[in-house]
Amino acid sequence: MVCLLGLTACNAENPVAEDKATRLEGMASAIIEGAFAPLDSEQATTLTAMGAEYMEYVFENSMGLKVNGQGMITGFDSWNKAIKEIGDFKEIKGYTAKYNSKGNGIIITADVECENGSGQVEIIFKDDLNNTVESAAFNINYTFGQKMARAGLNTLMGMGTVFVVLILISLIISLFNYIPKVQALFEKKEEVAAVPVTNSAPVLEDTSEEVDDEEEIAAVIAAAVAAYEASKGGSSFAAGSDGFVVRSIRRRK
Image 1 (cartoon, one colour):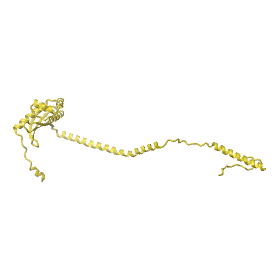
Image 2 (cartoon, rainbow, N blue to C red; image 1 turned 60 degrees about the horizontal axis):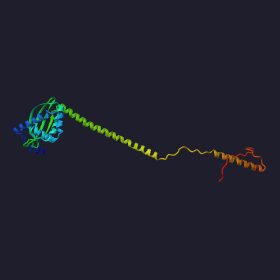
Image 3 (cartoon, helix red, strand yellow; image 1 turned 30 degrees about the vertical axis):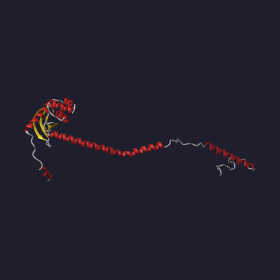
């Protein structure tokens, strides 16, 4: 219901007066055939590089047209891109004129034929006494196959970009598993660096002197015992002659 009520506010398109349309079509023809078509891409680049004010000066003094400098720079860029794609300009097939959506400007559409295709050059004039040229653009007529190919290419590029980004994110997330291992490796290196370096070679005690001392003590004690036995009138001591043998020696507390 809202949409239907909204349609009640629509009225028939206001047609452009025939004399005004004819005059604007002549101005559009002068722009296309006198400015856009004669200049190659290098010359157009040199002209647009001079800036918007210089563009306004050139059009006013050479063609007697009031233009928006920045809008014409955009128009030259659009023209050059289209010509590179569909070939050099051949002729203008016809014109149509209509008011823009706001009603304060008139759009002149020129059907243009080129070597390898066709298109429409849209030139917007301000609806004032000077009919100032606001902007211009070249729209190429693509075939259904060309449109589908461009749409498929755009879809492929868009989806390809998404999948590439997802794969990169997946790879980055998979690398998170190695973070604990790397941390443990660094912690292990820090612990090893903190341990003081010492001589780990075992220290061997020299026990040869202890063995010699024990043998000397045993010999002294055995001699003392033998001397004691002899003083008591016993037989002279001989190792093992009367069963006396020193088995071990222990120090008493």
